[in-house]
Amino acid sequence: MENGSILDVYINLIKDELENNPSPALILAAKYLIFEYNRDFIPDWIATLAGGNIFNFEAVREEAVNEIKQGGDYDDQ
Image 1 (cartoon, rainbow, N blue to C red):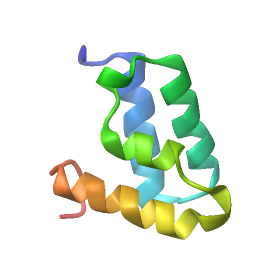
Image 2 (cartoon, one colour; image 1 turned 90 degrees about the vertical axis):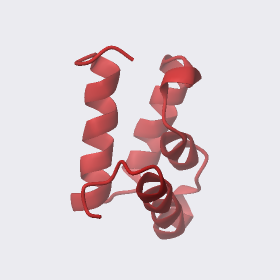
Image 3 (tube, rainbow, N blue to C red; image 1 turned 120 degrees about the vertical axis):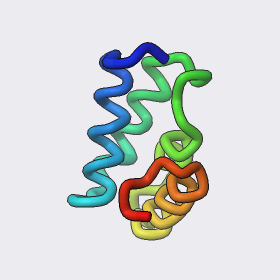
Image 4 (cartoon, helix red, strand yellow; image 1 turned 135 degrees about the horizontal axis):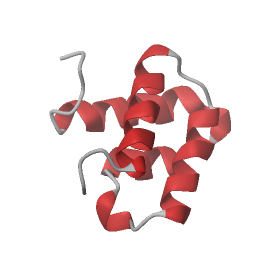
């Protein structure tokens, strides 16, 4: 993935919102990325969000955050 690409911006924005201002709308944002961009360039935690149920957001958020932490890509370590 090219540094500074719009996809990077979207991914970082979703990650920041997941940490600081979690909302079920992030599931829809993740679904957009899966639909619009090549899956090979999208982190697994975005796919976890995209596959999540809006009505069970807290569990989906927890799983995505765990995946981010396991990947060493979470600022709150």
